[in-house]
Every structure is written in C-alpha cells, then in structure tokens.
Image 1 (cartoon, rainbow, N blue to C red):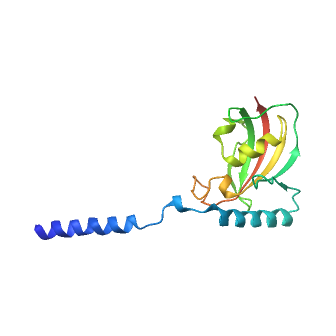
Image 2 (tube, helix red, strand yellow):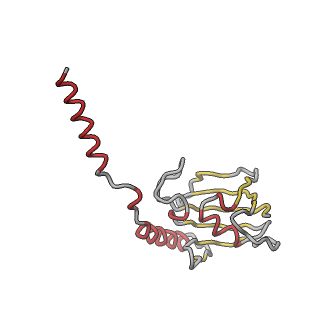
Image 3 (cartoon, rainbow, N blue to C red):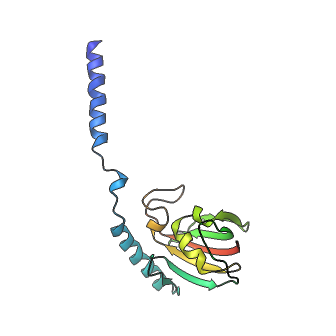
Length: 160
C-alpha cells in the first residue's frame, strides 16, 4: 500500500513538473504571424484581382463595394444589423447569416469588424480581409483554427 502511495505521489509530481514547464499563450508574439498574414493577404488580392486597400493604421485590407448612405458616427456602443458571409482564403465558408440580418453591438465583435464596418454606412457593402490577430488571434474559435485570416463580405442593414 505504501508503494502505491509513493508511486501516486511521484506521478503527480512528474505531471506537475511537465505542465509547469510548458510555454503559455501569454508569451505569444503576434508580429511574425501578422507579417505572414499580410504577405498572404497581399498575394491573395493580387491573384484574385481584388481592388482592396490596406488600412495603414491597423493592417486590415478592405474593399468598399457600396458605400451606403447616412451619417452614422460609430462607437463601441453602436447597434448594427448586417448580413454577412465569412470565408477562409481558400473560399470555404465558416459562418454566414443566410439572409437573416444579425444584430450586434460594434464593440462586441472581433477587432477587424470594429475597424472595417465604420468605413461604410447603412445600405453599404464591404469586403474585409482580416489578419488573424484582428480576428481570433492564436486561439481556435469553433470551426476557425488559430491564426486564421478571415475574409468577410458584409452588407450593413442598419447602424444607430
């Protein structure tokens, strides 16, 4: 019985030692991934002849398809409804509203949307190519793997 207790204590100590030595996500440096994402997005827009531009402050690439109309001043508490389709660069869809507008507060969505949606007004359509760090970063989220570049087409229905 004493041998079993000693083996159990040894096992717990070994597991504790190994788990305390693993690198945590707090040490993640997004810069190399951001550079790789930017290179991949540039290659994608060139190959597909997408007239997207890069926001110099944030690194989000966008194409305003239709600007919409209005004078909404956006903030984190702005209530928005939109139809959207989210894809990976390979074209596969990971999420979409399927014609039923989704309502949200601008401050409650990924940073890439917070940056891109204010480029248009209600009735507008925009395509956002979002580097992973402005999406879900190095964390997987449902069907979205860690470090995924996101390609959204957003039709802004309302904003207030």
